[in-house]
Image (cartoon, rainbow, N blue to C red; front, side, top):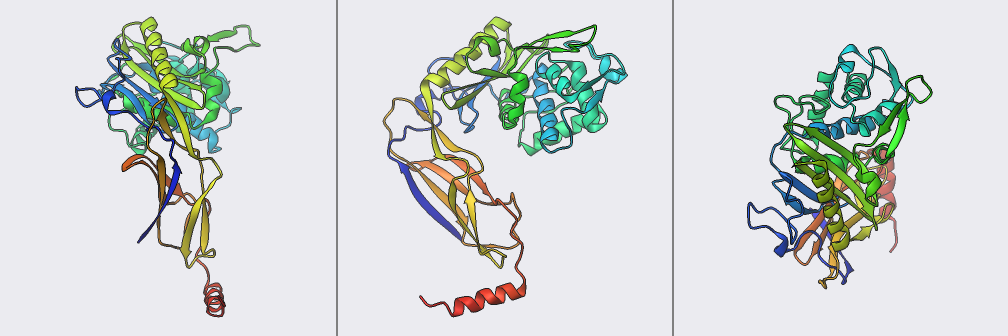
Length: 392
């Protein structure tokens, strides 16, 4: 049995997501009033905080992703850092195989060692194919084992248009992704705030104190020339053409724009800038709950605690169109009437559903913030006895 708690948030609400006139007539994809990426073979524009798709064009086409592949490589690396399996100061040794990579590289030599911090710079800024393989071997023992982890993460994220054959995006059979999937990977990567230190830097050095310093200049020029841009990854091969997954933050919004198959860097950067401009000028974010807000209370049967407060682990918000008068936004807390102990921290125990009218704008899973073990018989007896003698 479920308990549904309804709370009216406000009566101000412009709608989130994309309006009816913004839906294209072909293949049901979303598009703005104008085509934001006419030069791209495939594209998507997403609000990173809510996952709302503002614009898409052939966004599920399976295409060669070139070095945008490294978004997944960076994601697995920062996950290992955040989980304590890696430290930024750990040394990474370059194998003969890693040093043999062609294309974009930081010219690692066999046996050369760099820290994880330096390798991340080389991957994020210089798109080092050699650094990517060295990092993959450090984490998983071999590139092939690391690729297995990449594809496992694809499954975990529920992505349907992606399969990886290597960790750096060099042309390979059965190696493909889509603008949609890359946007979701980018959104996931951005949850690890440390990555912006690398993807948002325009220039730096490797081997700075050596006889052969290596000057790094970010391949993503938007981080210098577009206000608020701080990532994420460029890509190019003759097969993939010019690709980019970019992010920018402004006025409480964070945009993710992905373009694949652009004819040149000028068009690629111009169209992504235009996509950012569109989102920032047309939309705003409306917060439902901030991190740490108490959302409700979960009743627990036979636990050491009979109730568990549910706290917002992230900011729950919806994307709203600017300048349009709409009816109010409301949200519903959907919980079981009670949950039997034990309850594990991180266990999904309900959801928060945000509506406009009868339309669902967004759903957030709610998770237990702590373990609640099953209570012993004596504690349960005292609780039952106490309730028998409670006077109302």
